[in-house]
Amino acid sequence: MKPTWQFGDVYGLDPELLSMVPRPVCAVLLLFPVTEKYEAFKQEEEERLKDHPQEVSPDVYFIKQTIGNACGTIGLIHAVANNQSHLEFEADSPLRKFLEQTSKMTPEEKATFLEKDESIRVTHESSAQEGQTEAPSLDEKVNLHFIAFVNVGGHLHELDGRKPFPIVHGKTSEDTFLEDAVAVCKVFMARDPQEVRFTIIALSKDSY
Image 1 (spheres, rainbow, N blue to C red):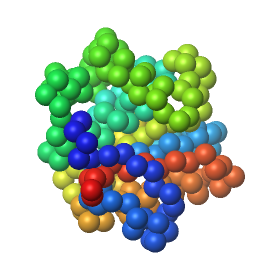
Image 2: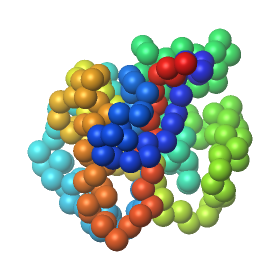
Image 3: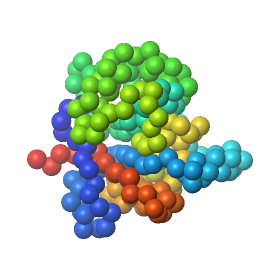
């Protein structure tokens, strides 16, 4: 990805701190703890939506997570894949090649393809090692999880490779997207009020 768009931390959820995030924002990543409360909610949500399915745009790029500890990679793919009209890729970008090759596949087929794609895995592992937090090994038990929020067709979609399908959280727009995504993040936080291990990252246009 060319450096016109950058991932950056969102330092707080009140309007003053949100106003410091460069705009426009095209994706939000949430890192959160997978607790018993969350797992119970996830199960209940899945059963409810299987009985009353939401209308999900066919334009949403969604991939299942089948590789251990790859939720950061899946979150990144979801953020980028659903914003290809905004982002510019380097000519030899492994991610662009992966998205082109998988665009017509089912979420499960995309996951199988990712398992075999050395270039994305190597890039993920090298970028994970560059991060400030120590990256867990692929087999280590991790109870933190990354998900992505994107605007597709004027609707806010939550994309989580552990879930069977995207979740639609109502309408959004380019102007209100960050606030709308943060409102959903606050619901995750309210579900586990004792927890402090939440991180929000925005993919925004570099203003420099």
